[in-house]
Length: 457
Image (cartoon, rainbow, N blue to C red; front, side, top):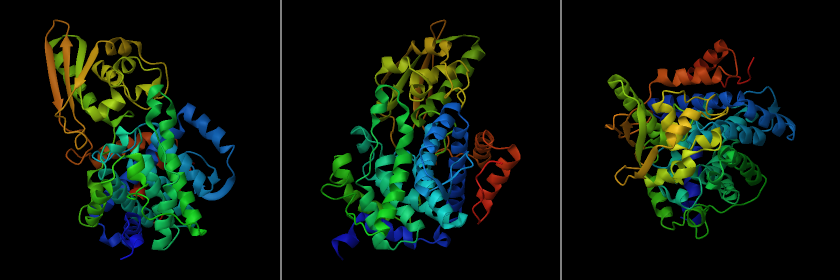
């Protein structure tokens, strides 16, 4: 076997070309459809947020029109690269998109946009979109798991860095490329991989771009490879590859090889988690704990005056550091990554939804309570396999209450019901289209073989 054909990108390309829909278990297919629908719903909701709609309008004014691909929430037809860019950005902009926990990837935001854009370009079926969506999840999660947490410690988001490589594989496969060309597209995408966490320093909203740019890079990498450009199949595990340069982990390539050995035996899409609040997923279990404690305090007729959070180190980098800044977020975008502010909202029984987390101003009552919330390291949290919470509150009489949530709702251990995902979809999609059209779209995405129209009526 040559170096090229033993490389991870080559093996991933073979999987993308060779996996049949019939080989995918029925429950995994069903989950794939749910995640596609969830991503589309979140993208539609984002298109209705005034600030994001303004951004989309100004951006599209600079992009060439034409093509056959749809912008979620718009009636324009654009070229596939533009659709992948805008839709990936929209889906991630609300912090409402799905997550795989151990690998710490936001899968659908970087997987669905390039597949959808190229599928519309090529006239592919929803069944092929489903097949490639499952392929994307199975590959991206394994890329992340091989160096779990390492990208984040270096300041990079694996969704965008690893996502560019996987998006290229998906876009090239959707265009019918052969295994060699798909592997070369992955190699080309490695030279476009990006996505840093410096947005945390000032609350910039550029994080939304991470999966959008990766999806865009993937579509272009596929185009470049199919035009004859070559890229290294060792893009991930090589001496100067993604793992060495972005994760500082030269042993991750060996772990990725082992991860790829389990393809078609272990279906990691079963582990992906839906989100039910538009804020950082690390915060969600604390909101559940806060709700429990709020109800206990109300039953005692006592007011909550403070709280204390135990926080896993890996999660704390995003939602708890520096703590003084997290207690006083600058705006709603900054608030999405503020553990004390979001906990305060929940303790006060205030809404945490798309409107409140995208449209200012911040709630003064919550900011005052956040100033009385503290945090400490949590060494036995089980992170990143578990997104849990340990939260204590202080009551006005000095008594304390404590709640522990071992794992977030929506995960494999605590799976979301179809009804819960449907409720979320109808609310999100209903922001951009009539309720009847939203329900019809859901039914089509969950049951049909043909790709439905996504354009609001």
